[in-house]
Structures are given as structure tokens and as C-alpha cells.
Image (cartoon, rainbow, N blue to C red; front, side, top):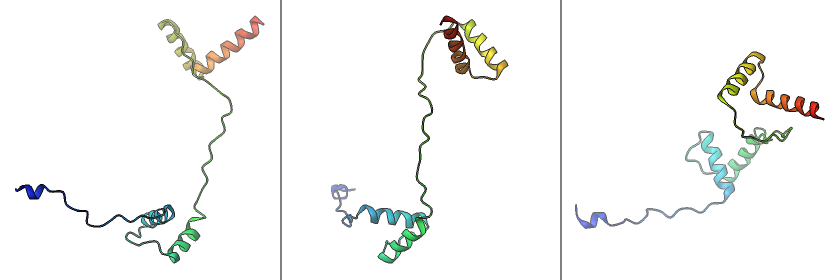
Length: 109
């Protein structure tokens, strides 16, 4: 192997600068299995007609309540008791703790 073989070669073709719409249309054609076809004006109309009924807006569910994470320390015995109560009642540990906090705050008031 000579040093000439290691020389950087010139790119074969200049990259085409395309608009975002053309790129998206070509991506839709690729997704439909029409590889190698460029989006012509007639194809663009067809894509818009075909794909408009398939577009579904993304809607995030509204948060009902602002829950926040809390960190606290429990003894291993408390953790075991909490797990047993959660298993027997079928409630989540965090739900049990929230109930206990509500009950205790009512007693204090």
C-alpha cells in the first residue's frame, strides 16, 4: 500500500440542500415503501390528501394533583410493618402514609 492510497478522496457528489417540507415528504414516501422516489408536486398533493386523516394530535394528560417526591428514613422494622399493611389492605405504601398524615392532622386540629 502506498501513501497515495491513504490520500483523502473527493466526495462523489455535493449534498443537495432541500427544504424541510421536501425532507418530510420524502420520509413519508420512504415510510410507505416508495423508496427512491422524489416528492414531485403531484406526489406532494397525494401525500397531503392521504396523510391528513392519519394525523393524530398528541395531547398530554393534565396533571390532576401536584404530588411531589419526599425522602424520609424508616427503621427496618417500620419498613417491614408498612409492607405487611400494604399487602393486607391492597393499598400502596404512599397512599397509606398520606392517609395516616391526614388522620393525624385531623386529630391535632
